[in-house]
Image (cartoon, helix red, strand yellow):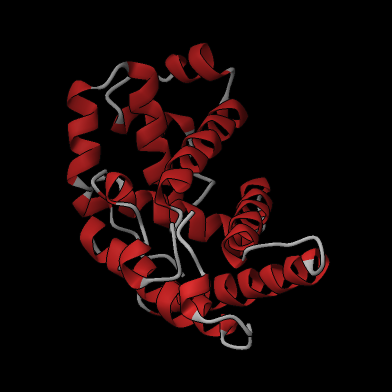
Length: 205
């Protein structure tokens, strides 16, 4: 499902190897490795790609599980920055998140997590559902209905997004940003069509 791309690691990961402190370097390289090659990648491989000793994973994270947890937290921080601020196309994928050259690796990590049903997948679904619920403009009269609507939108949208990603994995951070924007416009926004309010009511939050 995911293409192996050992021969062309991203520029961001190369920069990370050269400049970031060891702990941050390990997280960045691990996100990229897990996303592209699967969660079975060993800590020795990750440490080698990060130009660090294998023992540093144990030292900083207590082992591979701790490294995975750190990767999840790192990815969630980036997702929080990237969440769309409105239903308008220009509101999708905030530029400060898109400027991160590692966005491709983060997207791969998210798609793999969703496909495999990892703990991060549940957090992504919950976080995005709450965000869409807020964009819909909840009220005390129809809060439960809107929560259900938000949940359905997220489930349909993410399901289609994972399938689209499997059919055509984007290459590079710019292509990854375009992929996310296109998914928002084609897989998420159309499901709001039955909402009775006009587009002007969907205010930026």
